[in-house]
Length: 510
Image (cartoon, rainbow, N blue to C red; front, side, top):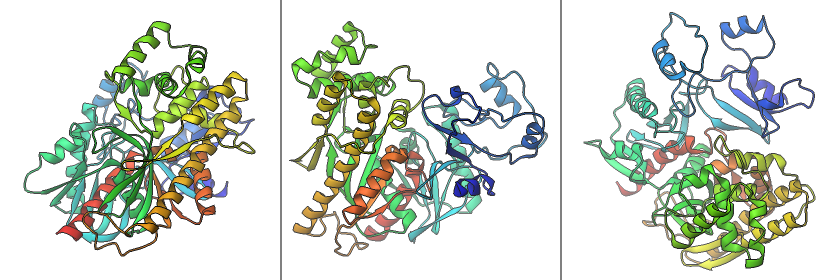
């Protein structure tokens, strides 16, 4: 499209994710799970020299997954010595390492997957100001944010902090950004998870005010901040994992929130994650968990055929873990639901990268003319519970009947979008009947207002099909819908939300 061309030829020179042409002449092995390709045009002299002599190049950054890119020959040799055959060096030192920015165009707007080189350190205008804040970000896809007045400066992509190199880069970036902006933050914002390295770093800082921010509130606050919103919204945060105040793993969340505070008013029904993080790497485990919880005894007999990679003995062990709650934490994660459905459609095998099963599911989906599956919204303690048990049963029945998998995947996407819309309607209607604000404490940012605004955030909304279906459905119901255009919806945008929350709480509470 013309917009994609403008991004490709612009000064920032990002990687732009575009739809492949059937006759592009490139190997399907470049993107076997999707019809998209990430492309960029030469922006450095070396690129032009290389492409003058050859056809399009397959390129990757000089690092291992979610580690910082190498910035000198010594690092390159240590990190990629067993991978790269040769290294071309330069006598100009790299002062600040920065991965390529990655974005795609959705409904004519930028959707960042990674905000880094070419964009950073552009400021984001905040709807409020106060003392300088350092926001330490999330554990995965980490970025940090430093504020100065009403401006927020989000760092380049750092990576996953469970890697030592990334954590060292995180500490370097905190110092570098503060020096670059000539500020000394007096407030440090952090995630609530006590074991995250970013949280531990924040709690170790002396002489500052420390403010903990719940993960999904930070997601919604990031979306609000980039749109200049301060009044209450319905926040829909769909992602893979985030620490809940109840000690469980959240990820399918409906919040009523302003920048300072939030209430959890709805959520996806929780299921066990057998093996904890191993269930993320093996989506078939989540399919088994959903199946054991929702299928009738007779329908459970279909699970071995639908999940052939799970041996009988493994199924028995996993079922025991689920039944006894041993190394099987509860999760309301939307990401794990996508994994489970992908696995039931035979898309959960041989997983080698994050969200691979969900990407396959989106690629397969053909939603046009397909009806959504049934679901249930139940009133529970703490809000509305959204259950997709009926959808799981119907999907298994369709698999048994050999219904086209593209129709099943399309129907599932329609189901999530419709369910999100109905949840928002119920939340809006209930808030009209009850006191306008029960946020604690009542925020000075918030006059009583009708909940007509919905903010969408979280990594699941990188799925542009789901984002479009959800946005269009909400608009038909009369909502004003806000999604991300300046920062990623994934954890790369969390630090902006943390900073906005910290400033709002400072303004409200002093």
